[in-house]
Image (tube, rainbow, N blue to C red; front, side):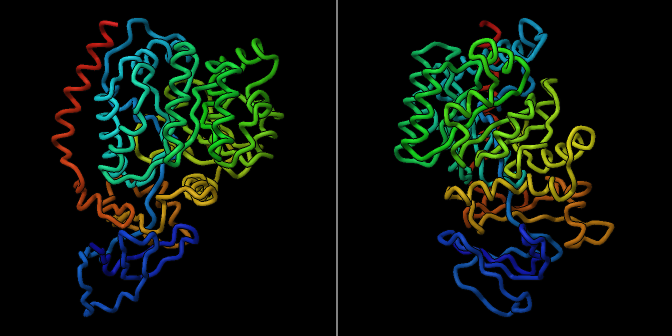
Length: 425
């Protein structure tokens, strides 16, 4: 069914131009039709009408880097050993958790992640998945869950040598199986868990399927230290030498502990950087600085949450002391996912992806100050409706595509099952 957003204040996400419009949205057309708002007498057949009087409508959001597999960790008990550094956080928390994931847990994690993305206005997700003892078919499971809720996606399996060559091989096989029939990326964990053979095979897949590498880069100093000790060069130099940076589809995540030469290599390449400010704070690994990295910087959540407005605010506020960031550059990073997807020909992020905001400000909202309202006023609680691919997936803050309460009830059971397995690890 077509949708009519009547009497909306439409904000062009690129120009930030404001206009009063009636907006026709069709599920079989990735464009939208903007009509004068004074045609209230016109009846449109087979069309659901949403009254947007007093509401703002603009393009929905997109997540540049997510970990849906971490969704059931919220509230989980402390690990058996309290981590003393980043490598131990991985070892005692995330690598313990991902080893326990099975198909059911992967599906539930993806469902609850998708629901949270929808509720927070994101209709497209780039996900970086790991389930080393449930590799085969895991990307298909995530895709079905995302699509059930109504999200578009760009998926990859996080291949790593940390669990041995056999599981690394399974990761590459899962990647190729997926890329044969779907848009996606070639996932790698990080340089310090990926040997030369696995890295080389991943880059071969990247070229074979005209894809990109999605990898954590210099998130912690340990990544650099191991790379220098094992390969005699720094992480970005190693990745550049392997060909990772040659693809405009490649996503380099974090990029914290870089020297000037590494920044130049990234800045002069077509590759993209995904900033994840809150995750950096949580893991106490450092602060992002975009100096020398070029304009291809976008924002992610790194599995911390599914709220891109929150990621925008964090990047801006933390960046005041550690980055050269302005209102305009913060907004560009927030919206750069759309450019990444469009320039690389990925599907699922057309103009028929919209978010409706019920935001009643005590001050004027204009083209000139809209970014300031995003930073200091607008939050996910103002999102009332979300349209993904022309279809209404959130209406009056209620998920329309799945039984949210039933899924949450089951997810609590599955979380307890996961936690019990971890406790007995």
